[in-house]
Image (cartoon, rainbow, N blue to C red):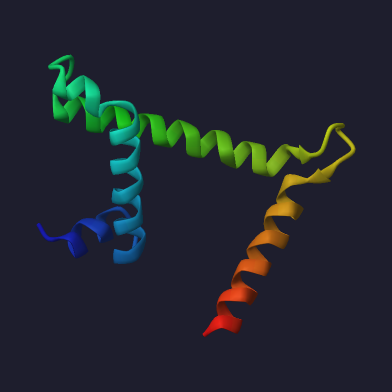
Length: 98
């Protein structure tokens, strides 16, 4: 099976799939690779744990984004608004640079 077919099976395009693999790789390197080298877990177990950890982090981030606020009090700006503003700025800057 090639990367394109595997990406389709995840309902991702090739770019999204490549980014996902890179993210899992960073999670693996940051959290589990030492255990693999010390023979505390297999590479397969480490990759599985990396996917589980990243999924949990992603779900936690999404919930914070949807429900949280930025600032010291609960009256701060909604995180979704702050994220939307930052995303728009990022898109604007990338289009301006092109």
